[in-house]
Length: 125
Image (tube, rainbow, N blue to C red):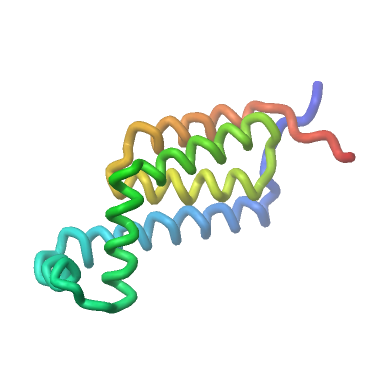
């Protein structure tokens, strides 16, 4: 049997950091800027801070389901050719998308990531 794609302990620790940072920043942005009335109103009024710039960028990306699309794309690439980098990109985008309510594609990407753990590891070249 071919070995399965299983991240090493060090890679798992980095993937945990990526996942927690992605979800943590998404929660901060959502609950501190998007759903917090005074900040959202100030940003809509034209306040020019890094939080408002991130707020506006996130709203545009959310409206076009970019978080879910990136997560599914990276998860499919990872499913076809397993690598820790693609796993990390898909994990970060899926976590961000789930918090930002891009549930359909982001949850599908999470399912693809789980299925990808059963795939054989890439052959060394």
